[in-house]
Length: 75
Image (cartoon, rainbow, N blue to C red; front, side, top):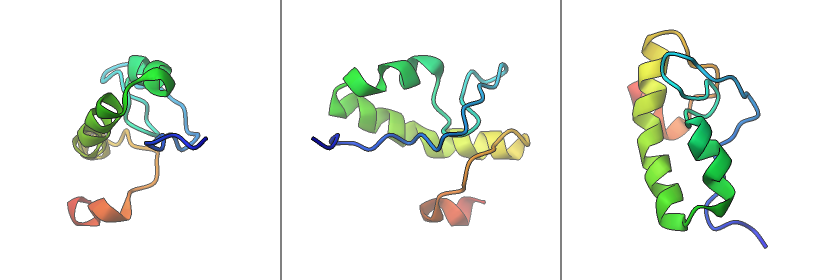
């Protein structure tokens, strides 16, 4: 069965010590570890947080993941 919400993981798993976020998907270690068992509402809440985190990490040269086309205007 396919998960209701796809994981934002892009297989670039490097945690940034300063932010506590993965430099590939922008999730915290707790969000990553709990993703599979989290309710869909929690997963969607996490996804809603990611654009701002990606932008912050990009501004500080920390972002390693691909930039989503839906966020091109923020680049």
